[in-house]
Length: 483
Image (cartoon, rainbow, N blue to C red; front, side, top):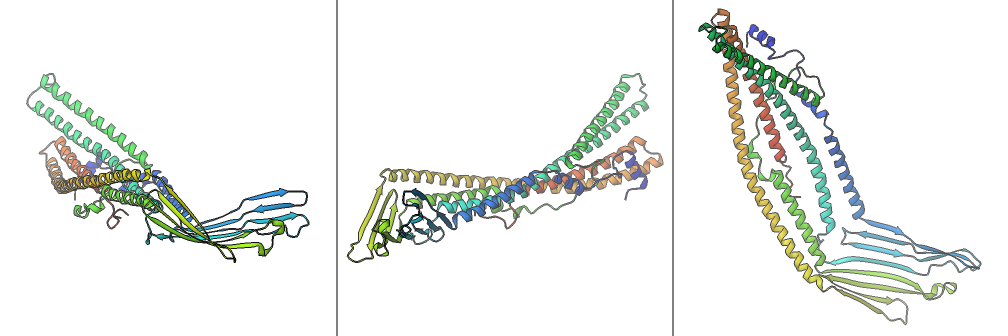
């Protein structure tokens, strides 16, 4: 515990201000409130979540209802012809789809009772047969990307808060460094005064060159003190503006936080690595989806159709013909073929076989080139991951060394502060006993305060190190391994 007189002297010298002191938490919370980027990132996160909802609506079930129509006018009647069409598709259920058409004629005016009728009906269902298991498609990649976007937006918010903390700590460090420079300048000024006093004792007169040189040095050191005070006030005003607060003096203490265990920052938590693994995973799915489009695919379907064989004025129920239409469609690397059978359900009618074929000869050559390009892309991604692993090992060693340095500094600064406190107490006793001058006594107080400021700077450096390290890695148990 410092003697009361020493504390009062510290206050007098404006080294520690107890009036209008502000805490570290108040400063940081003020700085955090002034940040608008976090709010913007939250809006981006909300938008990403809505995009995912929109994807589900658009792709899980594709439902549509449409129609087209014609209004005709004649001397006998006004009639409306339209074709309602209903379609349902379930991409997740092996691309199963259903479609239904019902061409309709309605007489809006006229005397013919048979002018309103439903001439045709068409119903068709289709699903994938091969491959037997669900294949990777471009929509799967799109879904993965949408989910990843949400994850990255969440991480961006956490990273923004860390960045804000680092920026704040950097400003605070600059202000404390400016304060430390004042202490050092005051020590130099005190030394210059001591040298001048010794010159007087040695008999140098005020008109001697040595006395003038030492007196000029005192003036120069005093100018440096005032310059450092000006810089300090500038830093203090800048910090006050950024925090939106009135600041008369820096906090008298900084939170003491234990440094993290560097061994816990494994490769899977390294952000660059996790991002590279995800990128390769997504691109692997894209390449697989691209190849699946050219692999052998087989789809089957069956339909029902009812057609009228007469004109609308002679339409009767018996005039309808009913058909069952099973079919298969196959495709492979630029070649596609389809076959269908139109099977009448009425007597004395014969089935009809329909088929189609399409072949793009250049597709095979194009596919081979695309496969080579994709192989090169994959190899490049593997090299990127290998380089990131190398960078991680270098960064890991740097973090270990930095932690060791900061631990050494903490122990050293604490020990120095204790020594300078004891020295300040001893200087006070000697000054009271008349053994040392006032300038020597003040020098001891300033050196102690310099040690206090240096200790606070060390705490800030450790907080910056913690935040910067956390900014390089994902939180524990949050590595997605590319998913």
